[in-house]
Image (tube, rainbow, N blue to C red):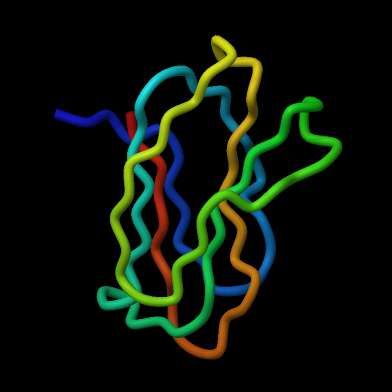
Length: 95
């Protein structure tokens, strides 16, 4: 059973207020149906403690994916809503 690490219900654009360190396999999901919402959510990582963010995955429809974080927790991860045209988008990272 997965433990939720970071979850956000986006009602506006912008990143999550917090970011998290991960190591090993993790899940990324975006739910556009429950809100229902329309827009784009990004999974982003930072190698420099949050100074610079790079997008590793993007979702504009319901999406489930598996990623792998290497570097023993030195990589920071966050969710970012880059576009929201209606409703609520629910996204999460779980491990």
